Image (tube, rainbow, N blue to C red; front, side, top):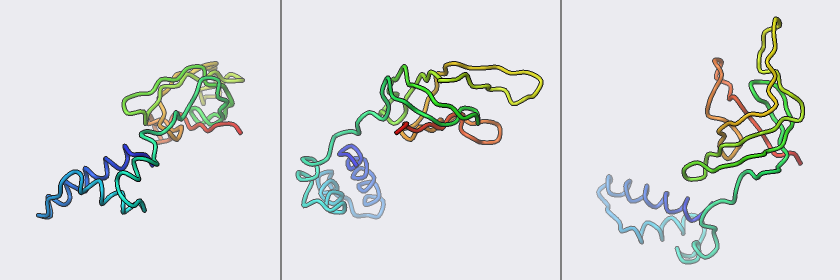
Length: 140
C-alpha cells in the first residue's frame, strides 16, 4: 500500500459520496480513507507509507517461468517502467533457448525476448487459448 494508492481511493470515495448526494472535500476523503486503513489521520498515513512501490524488476535479476507455455530460466538484461510503473518492458535472456513453436515439423528457438509484464510478472498479451505470453517470478 502506498500514499498514491490511498489518494486514488480518496478520489473514488469523493465521487461515490457526491453521487449519493453527500459531497465531501478532498481532505475529508483523505482522512476517511486513512482511518479506514487503520491510521489515526492522513498525516500519519503519509508519514509512514511510501509514495510509490519500489521497482518490481531489476537488471541482473534471475527469473523463471513460462514463455508461450515453455518453461524457462533466465536473467533480466533490460527494464523500463511504463506509465504509472505498474507495467514494465523487460528484456529477458534465457539460459537455454526456448522453442516458441508447438508443431512437431519445425522449431523456432528464442534466446532473448522483450515483453511487457505487470508487477506480478504476467503479460497482458495472450495466446489464442487466453494464456498469457509470459509468466515469470524471481528465482530465490
